Image 1 (cartoon, rainbow, N blue to C red):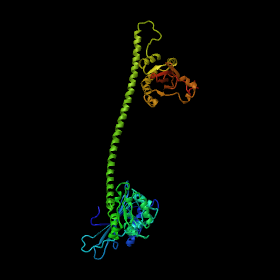
Image 2: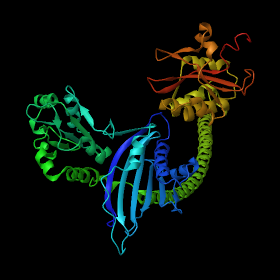
Image 3: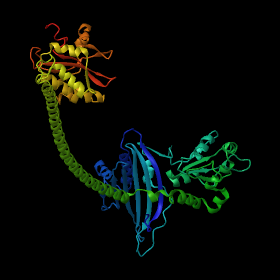
Image 4: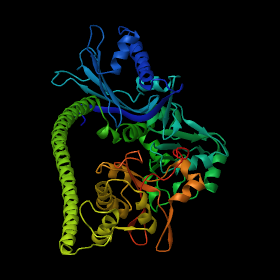
Length: 550
């Protein structure tokens, strides 16, 4: 809030950009400050180190013979960076109360080489002084702002247009540009147009107020335009879209910012002053009205981020960061605890999986033992039923182990929904020398382990999953090179229920066809019946690697 003991002298806001892309806009602003301050107070140092310190948070107190002090504040944050400076000066006159001048400057970066500047200059006489006060200051233009506008390393603009301390003289043919600027809904800076007045029979223009004095009093707070040409006034009358916005016959009109010329009644927002009213009050009083309305009572000061505001903002950011860091630390502790609990749960799950695998393996062993026991029981029952006979047929079951054919028939009887055998499979048994128990175990794993994998259609790597649970090795094909040889591939072709099947997949154990502990069991999965169809039991079928070994 504004200090109630202070009188607002001048306020303005505008944008700056360095002439060289990428230069430091704040440093160029401080160079303007240095030029103004050292000219006004020669005792101040000119060294860059002294002034560059003000880019950060810092203070320069009053010094002997130099009644000025500086205080800067800097706040850097993700959403935008802000810098503010307070300049305090003391002006003394003999026998009068000392006058304290305060200049507040804020700068908000829009890029490294650009930003928005706001300046507020106020004054107040020392309270409690028993004596007269100094005279009211004249409506001069602040020298500090003039130095900024005259800095050749900076481009100063307002509402996107270059600023000037001189009024703009308009000529015939320029009204269209003037109207486009007047009607621009994005224009925030007021525009003052001073129209000429002509005496009958004379081409000499007269003005109710001097355009140069108005421009000097308002500075960047308003654009000041005027014309000396009667033809320009005629052009305005002829071309203006709405006569309610015209300005002529020595009238001065203030076109307010953010116009809405298409809305009915908007013309009433743009005040005009007839020449007779200005002459009645006097030029000085009229300029004072413009100064107060456009350069003193502007509302941006209430939201202007001054030095104290930047300081509070920085303190708030520091506090917020501390709270955030504490929250992050607590969150990390919670995450760490959760990860530890997860690790314990994973270990427990692995133990349960391992225990489950052991139970499954034991279950498979028991099922295999049960099948063997049932087979033995069947054999013994047959032997007992034939105990009184003097002769027995050649295919009677005398003792365990069972013949290969009986093993296959038992699996068809007990697992007919999972496995079946082709004629060629039965024929291959004539050359099979593998231990019957090994054949039994291979068929058991084929039904108990391989069948669920093939029947699921989405079990992934069948061979890897089968091999992790069985003592046999599952191979999905005869090999890449074998597949290229049509003669070799003919061995794997078989027929089941009148349909051709490809029995490349096989279970393997051992590599010596002459050993009873070696086995190859070739099969295919029949999609139509949903069964595993066994095509060959016993020795290797030829493949690319064994084709020359026999």
